Amino acid sequence: MILPTKHLPTERSLIAIGADIVGLLDEPKSVSKLWLDFQKLNEQRNLRLTFDWFTLAIAMLYAIDAVEQSDHRLLRREVTQ
Image (cartoon, rainbow, N blue to C red; front, top):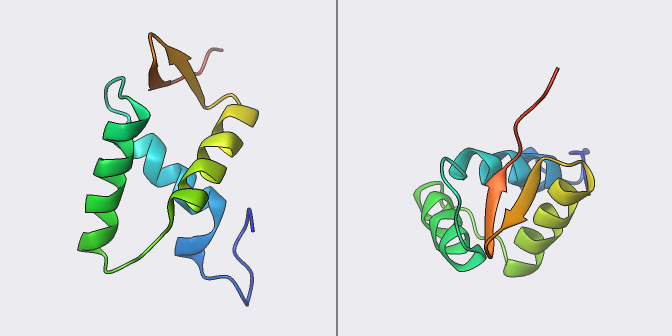
């Protein structure tokens, strides 16, 4: 589920979905705006992913400290040395 397997295509793995989400966070966005942007991206790829997979990917990103919330918006965390 987190990583692709022979039964789970790469584009449906949480790590790939999370990468797409982080890529869309070029600026702080509300979850609603991020979901709309994510849907547009997936429409271009002819890929249907549910809101459940989207929220699971966001939860994974929180767990690995890749995103944070500020003023009701998600933003990409900066990597510190």
